[in-house]
Length: 263
Image (cartoon, rainbow, N blue to C red; front, side):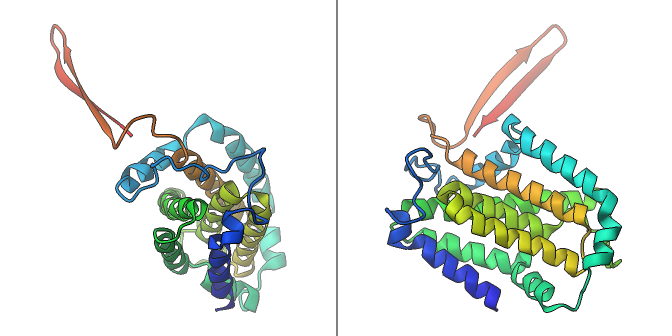
């Protein structure tokens, strides 16, 4: 309950006039947050297209560096999985239990949906854009996390099931933290990443994940969050909605029609 209250207060703070104007979280002139301009892209009508663009955008080249760093750290940490689990695991500790409940996908989903709905009604462009990206990142990250869990099929350290890799709680927390950081800078990003890191530690304490699961989740979430903010912040360049092109292909033994959809 305490964790959920902190989330709610944080959302109200980000929506306040002091934050969206000249308050302590406003980004400096050296870095303009992607939400600072009204480009018309973050609309309800465009949400499905933006969701798809964000999903594909994860594979862009600018994510190679964080992927390599995160992958290397995750691979190295895997050698210490058992040692860390033996040292930190304490499933009955209140810290792990509270964060497990507060950062559960169902709870975070409700919080994100509430923030998104709030963003549709407030006169705060930066908060509106951030709330839009939060929902986008939550859905994209959830999809990638679920696919990886099924594809890898790693057993949890407590033997509960085979959905250990990567940590969903951690990836969700880091995806949302990355969105906050991209819109409000490091003054908001650092506390957000600190909370996300605490969520990761709680998964170790609950003996639900290995260290490498948590680091993989943090890497995935960070990549998804930064991708969503970047993709949704791009200007429309005169396009409205998806563009469909039809190209006939005629050869000696070939008759075909190529359909291309551009978002």
